[in-house]
Image (cartoon, rainbow, N blue to C red):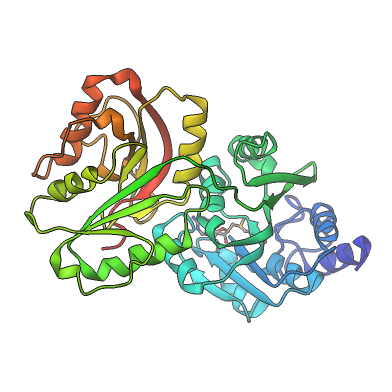
Length: 387
Ligand SMILES: C[S@@+](CC[C@H](N)C(=O)[O-])C[C@H]1O[C@@H](n2cnc3c(N)ncnc32)[C@H](O)[C@@H]1O
């Protein structure tokens, strides 16, 4: 289709609001896009074929329908929490889409994406328009992007946070996401090309104590889906009850015969014995790794290579703040899964065997050298997400 044919299709589809988006009439597919911006973007994208399209925030589904028709897409997927009043129209406008209704920043979204088991080659991010929203959507879908996938981000100009995000992509700060093109002067559509993620030789160990065999399978699945840039060694310290599970093919597994009921402390200490250098991350078996972690961590250590410990934000299942990353380290300010720490910096320090162990272990290491700690308030882990 030519650019003008695409524009004609958009104008015929109908606008959500002439005052906000423009167009010829209100209604129809209730498109929430500036017609000329979308026509330019779709025309630019039409130089290749796409199979699996995902729209994060689809409202009435009109824009997804346009992508499908203008680009001849086979499969359309939607993630939407249905908070928008037009979402009920999607049943008619986009009847064949595969949908998941929920928060795109939540751990449930990741588990759903794992269940779909699809690699997306085209994505539109158009749900919440603020930095935290677009940043998390990008990393949450990242493990599910095909090689050379295209990710479109809408409403770049509608919020300083989305514009800031786009500027960071343009500056190349979030490899393998690369800014490609930008369309528009009113709302703005940024086009990101997804490069092949480049592995980096940063030694990274994940230590997971587990006494819950059912969760091992999930850990194994998560491990096979991501991360993409680090090649972590995953040390699973399993209690004897887990022995019958043989799914952890890529994981270094240690059977723990010590003290159950030590809040994971004893098992983490066993894990520490098999690591003598590199970075260590303690991920409990009911926490879910946030796909942003490796990217935020790699950027943090490249900016401040002298830091020995990094505290990141931990969010709950729904993506809301559980512990924010701010100094100092202390009770309710840090959790097991919110810290990445240098093994040499840990030295002979060990975990206690009680429920405050998460805090006291890190607190001692913080007191030893507060200046060695960095704090980045970006999500790295979903707390208790697998329970
Ligand atoms: C701006 S509208 C989408 C417009 C649509 N893409 C279009 O072009 O016509 C934003 C959509 O995101 C959904 N949404 C908002 N926050 C969300 C979240 N955290 N997770 C999933 N969907 C969300 C809303 O229900 C709404 O349907």
